[in-house]
Length: 100
Image: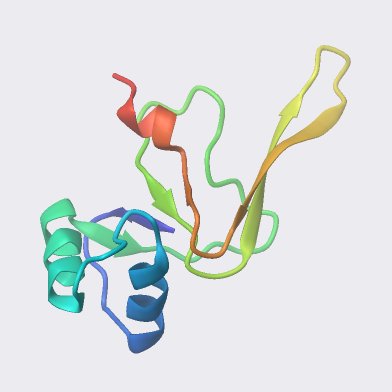
């Protein structure tokens, strides 16, 4: 997941970022420049960690660099159901990051 701060670019990441719709058609230097200007960081999460929680105040665009995540929601009876999946190379939390 990319979040605001700083990221060390490895060849594996640059390959993945080139294919991501966010950076499609950009050259490596342009991608690196965009990441610096955005203040991107790389964060690692343990399995079953919460990436985003309901009511979270500060939201930022995420990009899954490795693994996958599931967005789920609880219904009024407490049952959990899957809303969407985020796979490697996909962005997530766009609506939340753009909201005021």
